[in-house]
Length: 297
Image (tube, rainbow, N blue to C red; front, side):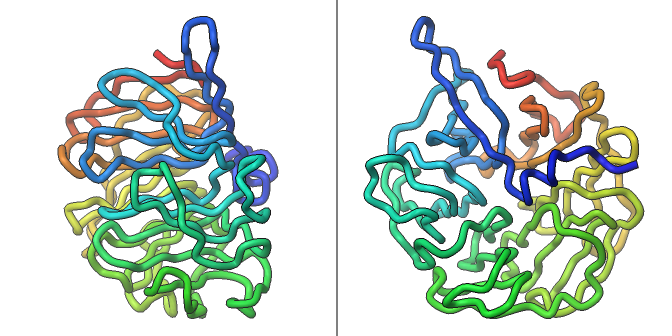
């Protein structure tokens, strides 16, 4: 059984919105399409249709900065990267291609492909300058569809042949320290490449894989899947067997995004397709809801 992703995240990019109730300042997540911690581990960020939602010190808020419709949002230890659509009045061309923030999302630099491409699948390496995207259509810097990567902030892109990759791509992840190691979660499982996406081998096959995340310990990959029920697993990169992680009761829901706090290695966050967000401080033994069905807790 496959997870019923509406039009596969609207062609691999779930639209999100963030609403602030002016009466009491409550944050409502109207879908979720990204999840990242800040470099200091103090803020959990969810990109949205109108800017960033932020969870900090036990409270939700709306971040300062342009209220762009962020797609393919991904963080590194130094910068934030995204694709998507500009906020009204920002002066940016739609879509804005690839952009980078050096100040936590307050301002953004244009890195090319403005007006050409909106990358819904985009992933960065925490400690290197590698960025991988799944290119949906030819553009001025990528003549082919499919997996591409850059090591110079988008000035030049290289295509990956992706031999051995099976199924339709749902998510990308890049190793935190090895720029050549990339994972793709697909409808056929999880596949890993150690040569910049030229050749892939299966790390976990069978269930529909929906999310992927390289642990900052450099030795494991987390992935979410669906086989009639939501699953979350942590698998050694050396080829060991996956270890199941007990999830909260999700019903007809599944893990869409995974993130790890860079300052507290046992703290992880997951976000689901049905707009619930959970935190664990003990590497997944127990979870606490901080948002359920889009409503803050």
